[in-house]
Each structure stands twice: as structure tokens, then as C-alpha cells.
Image (cartoon, rainbow, N blue to C red; front, top):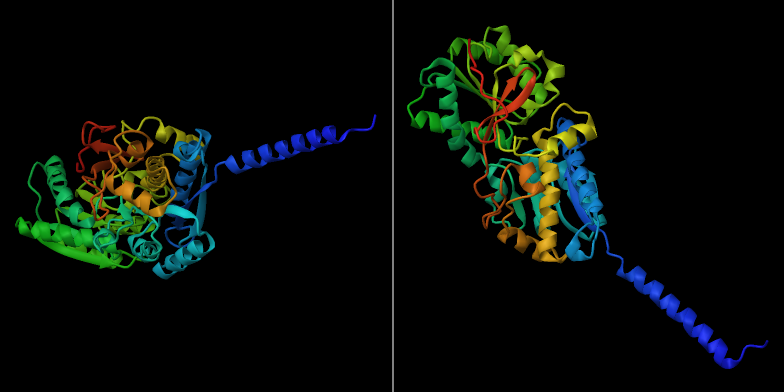
Length: 410
């Protein structure tokens, strides 16, 4: 049978309609939403940065498995990852390359150390990219930038926050008020600013600072510092640190001159003191009773977040690095949901106004999250951790504590 003109036209129109439907379906597929993570994969902070990236990846996988960004038609999150290297210049160059190669980035986070975050955010601010930082340097949110959001406690707030806790530790340890304090600090923006703030607060209260030792990161030998501290005869030590090897060098050097957490209260501020790597660097007995201040750490209110992390990675506990990485991706996800847009300015506007009071962001970042106009987090939390039986556990505040505090001296 020879097809008629009408039959041929009907067939052609049917094919065309099918092609148009297929094209429409393809066009309706939600685009990926690109989030940048610039963190350390090499250099002295490589372990910390790698964990933060793993936390970010865990969050992105969970979000995508749950249907992506609902207000954007189920758009999936795609992480664009770059190595921040070892120096601020490395981080700045990484930011410039990443932004040039990925013009559709809607937000980002990183890196581990404040000096690199300062360098990165100079670049991201000019590009109008909402950027989350975990550093404690006050300068991160005091430069008048509109697109930088800090989720940690700034150094200017940390000093007055930790002083009452130091006094409590002194009374718990000896039954007496704190006096004759030695201060040790690695010379990075956040750690030295906190150490300086603690020193000023101590002196304002009339508490004697008998020694202050500042050293460059990756300290090779702490024996000279330890000898000077021993001669000063402190009854309390405040130590502001950044990485596990430096923490080990100082603690081991002090132990060699007879100063340990068993006879002198140690109050440590900074990331290196509760890293799993510490157990590879020194015996757990040398850490027992050491108290560490943190703003982000798994608590009894964190649900199964840490359990999922440990199952995923095989690591003995979830440090603050992956908690920040995980929480930052979820925070950006929440901003995208509320903005209903990938426009950077709309996302930043939402971040300035929103308050997150429940969900994965709150579990990871230890409490509700909202920001001042400057980008500084409103009422960031404070926690005390203590090394107990080879694990740093939350001991304060009591409503989120996992264990009761041990006395720091015997």
C-alpha cells in the first residue's frame, strides 16, 4: 500500500512531537549546583584539609541521595575541590584558578588555617561568592566584606570565653584560684590573637603571667622552650596550638622537664590537641586529663552523625575539621533552598538573614547558626574536651557532655 500524503504528514508530526517532548524532558533536567571547597591536601595542614573535604563529600552525597535542592527542581550538588597548599599565596592562587575555570560556582568554603582563609576571601569577595570560613582570626569578619561568613568563635570572643573555664579548671585541679600562668602559642593569626587576648585578660584580673613563648609552626625542638617554662615555675599552662606535631613536640618537651597534665593543669586552645594523629605521636598516658577548648565537636546531641562518619572513614572519632566541612555544605544547601536561586547575591542575602535551628547543620556546628551583618556567627558555642582513656570527649557544658571531667592533677 502506498502511503498517502496525509499519512506521511501524520507520521512526521508524531516524530516531531516525540523529538520536542524528548528535548523538553532534557531541558527540564535540573542543572548541577557547583560549590567550591578549597582546602589543604598538601603541606602541614594536609591531614586536616583532607578530613574537611571528606566531611563536605559526605554531606553532598547525603543531600543528593535525598533528592538534591528541592527549590531548584532537585538540582544535585557538585563539589569543585582545589588544594590550598601550604602558604597563603598557594591558597590565593588556587582560588583564582578555581573561579576562572568554574564561573558557575554559587558558594564555597575553606581552608583550614586563618591566614589562608584571609587570602582566599580577598579573591572570593571580589567575585561576589558567598564563602564560609572556620578560622578564628578576627580579621576574617572585620574587613567590611559582604560575602564572608565565619562559623567559628573569633579570637576576640574566645579570650573572654575561655578565661572563666580556665579558672574552673584551676579550682577543679587544686581547689585554689588560678595564678602563675605560662602561655605558649604557635604564631598563626588565630592562635596568637587568642593567646594575646588571654594574656591581656589574665593581667586585667591581676593574674601573674610568668612566661610567654611564641614559636613558628612545625617546631622541630621544644627543649629550649620547656627549660624556660620550667624555670618560670607556672602552676597553670595555657597552650594555643594549630597542628598535632607541634602539640606533641611541646607536650613531650615539657614532660621531659617534669611538667605534665598530672601535676600542672593544661588548657589547650586549637585544633592539633585533639587530633587522632596524637595517638601515633605519643602515648595516651601523656595526654590523659589534658583539657581542650573547641566550638565544634560531636556531643550527645549530635545524633548519629559521628557514628556515620566513623563507619564511613574508619577513623576513631569525628574531629572538628570534617564537622565544619559537613556543616558548611549543609548550610549552603539550606541557603540555596531558601533563595530558590543560584544567584550569588540572593544566596548571600539569605545567609545574612536566615537562622538555622535544627537539622544536620546544627548537629555538625554544635548549635543554631545565624550571622551578624559582618558575617560573624551570632553566639557561637564553646565546649571543653578532655582526653580520657585515649579519646577526647566533651565534658562541658553538662547538657551536651558525654563524660564527667577528670581532675587534671594528682
